[in-house]
View (cartoon, rainbow, N blue to C red):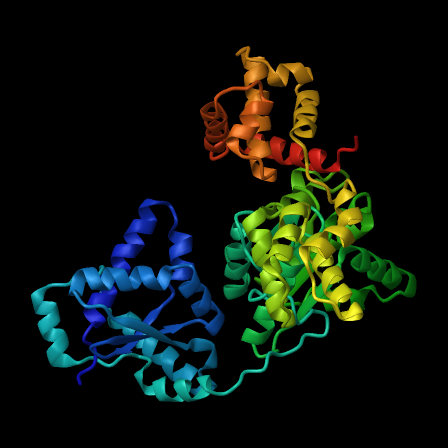
Length: 496
C-alpha cells in the first residue's frame, strides 16, 4: 500500500486551522497545540511527530487532534485515525540527521501556504516524497515500547507534574501558559508569574514546569527551586560568610530559576537588589524564570519599581478557587493516583462543601481515607457528615454567603447594604450590584434565580444580564479585573 496518501491534504488542513485561529487572535494557542509534523500514512492512518507523549495526551484530551481529523474528513471524504511518535524519544544521532534535513528543506521550500489541487495530488502520488521523519520512524516506535522512567530532580516533588494537575475554568489559562513555558523555556512566557491564594496549585504548576524541562533535557540542565524566604536567608548568610561570589555563581548561571512566594521579599531591599541583578543575568542568557505570589504584582507594596517592572515584563496569571465540577474532578484524580475508591456520594459531599482551595479539598479526602483504613470500616455519607461536620463549620472552610459578598462590595463603593438590594437604577448603585452579582456567580454555587432573589427579587434574566455585562467589560478593562480580584480576596478573608 502506497504511503503519503494524505500528505498534501495535511498541509492544507493545518493552513485552514491556522487561519481560523489567526482570525480569533489565538495564534499562540495554534502554535502550541497543533505542533504536529507529518511522518507517514496509510489509507486509514496518519502518523505525526509531536514534542512529547504528554503533549500528545493533552492534544487528544482537549480536542485538537479530533479537529484535525474532522478537517481531513471534510477535504477527503475519508475518516482516518491519527497516531504519533514523540520527538523527545529520538536518539541524538537521529536528531542531528533530522536537523540537517529540516535545514535543507527550509532552504528549498516555498514559504507560501500549500494549496491542494488536482495537479498537486497527481504529483504527490507520482513522486511519493519521503518525510524527514521516515528514516527514524522504526527507531522511535521501538523506543516507545520501552518504559521511560522520569528523572528525579533533588529539589522538586515527583508528584508535581502536568499529568497530576487537574485544570478547570479557574486554572486553565495558567495551566496552558505553564505548558507553553515548559515547552519553550526562555521564550514568550518568560518570566511567568502565577499568583493566587493558598492551596490553589501555584507551586504545583511551578514545579511541573521544572520537572518537565528537567526530563525533556535528560537531566542535563541547571534548575533551582527555592522559596523567597530561603533565597533571602541564603543571600544573608553569603554576606555574613563572605561568600557572595559563590552565591552569585550559583544563581546567575542557571537554565531555570523557580522562586516561590515572592511576597516574602517585601521591604527586604538588599535581597531585592540581588534578585534584580540575578534576573538581569538570567534574562540575558534566555533562562526561564517562574515566580509565584499571593497577590497581583500591582498590589505588592515595598517592592522596588525596577524589580516590579521585571516581574511584570512577561506573563502574569491568577489562579482562582475551583468550581464544583473541577473540585470533583480533583478528588477523582487524587483517588486514581492513590489507587483508592470511596462512594460517589461521599466524593460529592466533599466537593460541594469545600469551596476554599485544593489543599483543603485533599485534606478532607485524606481524613476520610485514614478513617476508613484505621477503623477498617467502609465509608458512608453518614460517616462523612459526622466526621467532617466540624471542618465544614469552620469559617475558613464554610460556604461564602451572598450577604457577605454584598457587604464587602457595598463597603468598597461606600453604599449601604440596602442599596445593593434596592430596585433603584442610579449608576452609583447599578455598577456595584452588577459586580456583586458577577462575583457571587463566580465564587459560589448559587443559581441565577437564587441570586436574583437576594438582590431585590428581580427576574433572573436581570442577574444574567448583570453577569454578562461585567464579563464583557473585563475583556477590555484591566482595572476592573484588578478591582474584582481584590474584592474576592477581601470576601474570602471576611470575618463576621
